[in-house]
Image (cartoon, rainbow, N blue to C red):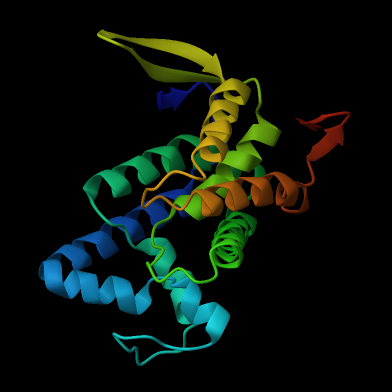
Length: 228
């Protein structure tokens, strides 16, 4: 399932969402300008390598900056064009509404905090991993968690593939994002280069943190948030 757009209009222009998308694109173009070898060096020098954090050591190739810098830098780097496009699609569809609910300043704080908690989850659960973690998906997973709480019944136009049959259907966000989350859980033990733990940590962090970043006009009623 690939989300295309939602039927959930915003009241404000999502300046932060647009800016974050632009930064990710500019950083990716910079990565491409380095060539394959230079890009790989950049990824190993600025990506999040759990072993470095859990053992307080910088492994080759060595960096000239504090290791903590990588926690932010890695959020704006990507491993390929599909990695970038997939993340930016989810960020645009769901980020604009979450930014609308929080306001610009709170939203950027939420985005960065969700990304940091997603990375922390990955580091804690894969303490000896030496493969760099890069990408915006941890922070975006936090946005998905917030959207899941705020707008569970928003309709999302979704591209569906059923063998040779392809169609677009409207599904509630609670179903689409619920399936997405279960997919992350199922694939934890799979041998792939996807940071499933970061996705899960980001999503759960977003669900928990969202209430602390909302504008005052959002109040919690029973099991959902409503505007007042």
